[in-house]
Image 1 (tube, one colour):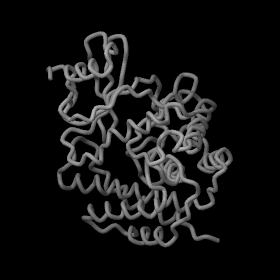
Image 2 (image 1 turned 180 degrees about the vertical axis):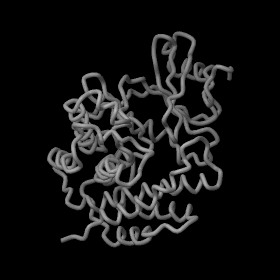
Image 3 (image 1 turned 90 degrees about the horizontal axis):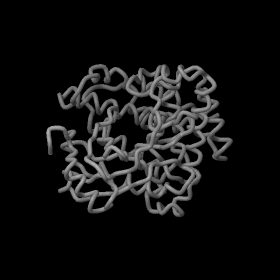
Image 4 (image 1 turned 30 degrees about the vertical axis):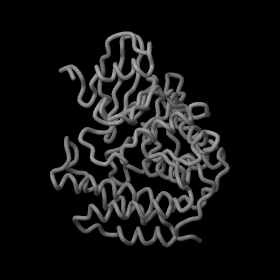
Length: 341
């Protein structure tokens, strides 16, 4: 590596690999910058002065390769390329860790804005904000309408028993980071387990679908859906519920995620759900359970971050208040899980 190479990306080795796999793709000396904002996999924008590409690789010093499966991301993006879901075109997957120290993949660079704040959207005005939010919902409907088998993703996950496994997985995560009393969390888990809904037809699930994980162009069209590391085959209402949960961020002190849904013109939760239901034709009558589960999952994620922070195992600023957001999430989860009438 040279002093100008960003951490985790040896541009000389990358160039040699691309020249071998895609001769003629790169025509000049490569330079790169790290894309800020990601908390998991590392993302770089690479250019030779003429073309631009994006490189994704696991974080430095990662221990569990299964938690950062580049081949999985590469596969789902490649499979969706010829569908109605906008994704970047994939260029190459490298599973040889000797090249960059970990597996990685390269995809085309897609222009667009990942709207993260209400201030960004407020500058566009209510009408454009509404158009972008509607496009976000419609793109999710398009994703859930994709035939996994036709996209070569028929074995991408195990839809049977999906919700039960998800609940069990996040309970195990919680138990692994317990270091303090969390009022209501066991009650929430037990209520979720007792009222497990019957899933409708399975689909490709993004796993973290939100406005700042898509790119939007100047005509308010979504040009690419990004960050597929949580994707699988499962219950599509888990994606819808996360959209709802993120929109409730101000009520539950969820300060680490986008507040774009607070912008003037952004549709209400009821409007988002109604649009999804109408366009997808899916039954959303049990959505309260899914929203409750989304709050449970977010609480577990934040508690894990708090646990690592309390042990001095986090890097960077902004983690000192993360623990205070866990109990409100639990309370909101219990409140969301309304009794069936």
